[in-house]
Image 1 (cartoon, rainbow, N blue to C red):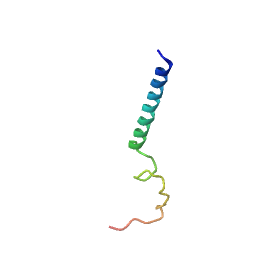
Image 2: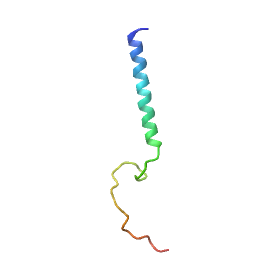
Image 3: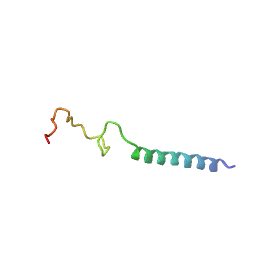
Image 4: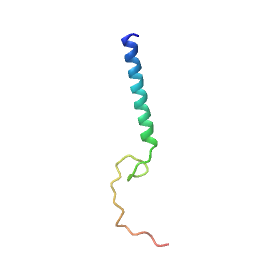
Length: 53
């Protein structure tokens, strides 16, 4: 096998791993974060009482 072919296969496998990791991280549940998952939510709502029903 040619060295260029081997390097091409290695780069392709790395790219597949990277894309798979992006997809997995986008659909996996995020513990302790808001629904959007953007990380900009820093509001603390623990001191606000629940509305009475």
